[in-house]
Image (cartoon, rainbow, N blue to C red; front, side, top):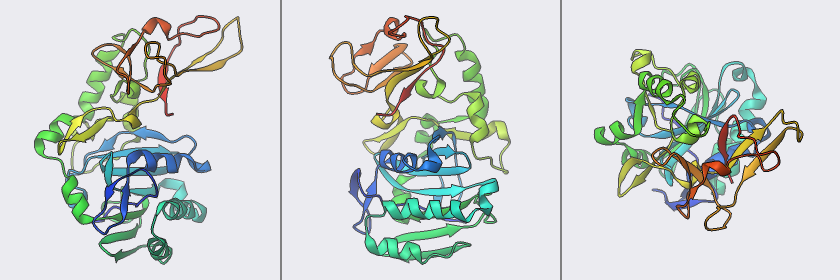
Amino acid sequence: MRTIAFALLLVGFARQGDAGRPLPDRTRCRQAAAAKAWARDLRQIPSTVIDKGVLRNVPYTSYRAGEYELNVYGDPSAPAGFEIGIHKELLKSAAAKKNCFDLVAGLLADAADRALLATLKQDADKKIRAGITFEVTPPTAEDAYGGWWVSVYSEPALDRSRASATELEKITVTRQDVKRIDEGAKGGSPLPVDPLTQGRWAADDLSGARSRKDVPEEKQAVYAPAYSRKNGAYVPDRTEDDTGYILFVCANSDKHEDREEILKLCTTCKKDETFFWDLEKKCFVGFQCGNPYDNALVKCTLCGRVPKRVRTKHR
């Protein structure tokens, strides 16, 4: 079974790894990829539950930018690591593979780790240094999902990151239920809020998820888009990385040209704040201050129109 790779990053460290090298938080992983020219359209996609091998029952977050894919495994605030890979036409691209190596190399804090990474063969390779495994996996591997991957990981960290059956029940949903919930959510929100911003998947999001061959498609489970680990247990939750400024586009107005509007200021505490959509309260809530944002205020400040779709933008 292929071991998936994970990178040790430079900042945002939550704790020390097994080999004394720091592991990054999920925010740093995402930011590092999003800063690359080839990942400007980076977006979160559903993460299919893996129930075999080294990644068995390890929750993870997936991001796609075209045919690039980034996966971050374990507790979002102290991940076991990450992998970066490519799919389809990019499998033929030497430049795309170099981009993957460059991303990992740029985030490794240890010079000796970077030197070891540079020695890996691009077709397939695996080396271990001080308890950390560095790996290149070809698309022909059994669990490569047709992709080519650069990986770095610690097996003890993965073992500590596995979710129990009870935890999995709380932070996963089947594809079938994603479609059912999405259908039932239509018209149920006072604002046209993007499903991911609501903390759930839309049926259309499933097209980007990995597909398993051993389970009927509708029964395949995916991890919830927002979870964290508290007191040693995975729970449905929002981390700061799941929040952002309130964003929408006001188009076709007779009072101004099409424009993007970003709402940053909490109307209660008067501070620059990031928000998330609270399904129970049916409004945006400040992540830090906990104050609700009045739905009536989510409108264009120039023409007063209510947006057709609202989402959040990372700080």
